[in-house]
Length: 473
Ligand code: SF4
Image (cartoon, rainbow, N blue to C red; front, side):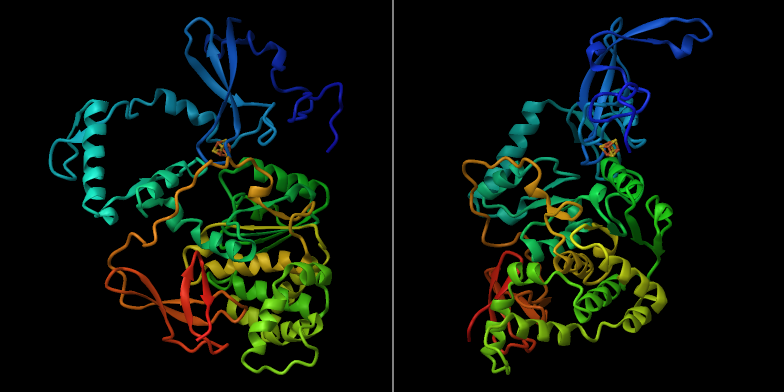
């Protein structure tokens, strides 16, 4: 939307009628004291840019510091912030609680009674640091590294803590991610080697969002703004969600599939693109690892009409996905065939301007939830809507990520000691996703055993990051 240049805020917000204080006056901004009304009492403020961290969107805020008391009176949006552009969700201005809440923890506390009794005593920082450091050191010296665990709600930094723990040889970095976005990250990681998507909703032609994507409800305001920008420019919005979320209320297509069935719908859309040659052939030819895939098939004696040819791969692709019909998806999801077909046709019109997102919920709350993000990004990978205007970028491509000079190697073993004797997983080396079995030996080393038969007939024998490498027997 174009704002009138004479009345719009000149910064990134471009808000019509200049709703924000111009930055030239941030050193001395005057407002009437609302509590003195009806008297017209002026208050003078310094407006100091800061950042909201009530979620990791890190929207810009302006702290209104009263010049008489030197206290923060309130927080408002920072119109100069290129991400949030002056707008915030309700949690942004509520940051004031964190400045004034009487229940804030202002100094270290040590349990004074039994666990759960709620009794605490104040202790000094030196005592806490000495106590924790000596216990951690003792555990490292005695090689009890698996007894050290660090938990944080949201890390909010680019790997500093992970480096420290890795330097200690400890695999004990926990955060809420373990039960939140890790499933979705797995799906993205398998496609692009990076676990976070950065969708360009504002320039998309079609936006597909699956519960719970970052924009779904209460926060991640910068994303929500871009969805609305995209819609204002004519983008179609498709939402899969069991809830009538904020985004769902703005959707052109809102469906509520049975939880856990989302991947079936996505695969039926993929199948529609594949069977009707509606995918970006050049992108697939250039960026998919189809040659490696054909190599693996050839070693188990599959017939091929054209050696190593892309056409052969396309033929296999058609066969491989042919079971994922709209009827199959409808049966799995409870959504009618006609609606799924209509959505597939809309997706097919997007070309490289297809933005999509899925984060937690369906990927963390159901068995094999990670396949949802994997199937979703497959649509991007089929359409060639990867790192394009209106498509989805790997997020590390369009944000600054500091690279440390030295990164210690990650510990070779995982922290958990009580693994089940056998742990079924799926091989991700090719599209067949064969089931394999992970075992820990007595020394907690990871073994991959052929408890299930793999399609290619080879035994996976090595674990490497999130991929199971298939080695020759
Ligand atoms: S979306 Fe809301 S909670 Fe998140 S950083 Fe922005 S204002 Fe804060």
